[in-house]
Image (cartoon, rainbow, N blue to C red; front, side, top):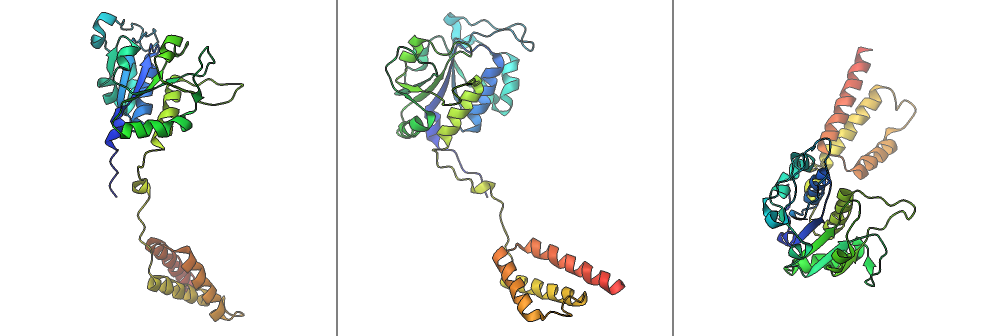
Length: 268
């Protein structure tokens, strides 16, 4: 069975990473997005730190934002989602990233001096999907790994989203947070999983009956019916295999086994 096509409206949903500091997190976020059908990524003023893999980090210049080049570490962690990074838009401000959006969700888990209601991904995602279906632009905005989104960045968005978790220990990595939200979004998209299900070649009634007859012959050969009448027992066996809805390959396996039993008894 052919794989289903992803709906075009997913292209209306953008993941925005603001002031991300770790090169690996950008790549891992891109991978998390693509696994859930999202490919639109915007980086706002990346503020990368040195890492063992990236000892010399590129410095972001807001006057030439489009010229910023991500380090190799980001591409390594992106794995098969390198195209998401290659096509990512890089801007200097969140206002630029949100300019054409109608719905923008600030991901935050900290209680601030904000009066807007905070919603979980499960609560908000249906409305985000509906907006994207209508052709509207939707943004999911994630902040810096250490400090999250600033109050100004949160206020630039018109929705607040938080990932609910253990109140005694809540520490999601940036890419993990992206994965959670993108999964919740994709769960509201009607993409069939039938292509993942194996195709079955079920045995016909005649094939099952023939196998049961072979079973009866093997049981008779080993003396199983010496003190048991075969008729009632074999009716039960027929009913068992009918309920099991065997595949043709399974019938062949069983008949091969019965054949070996008969050969062994004959040699003995």
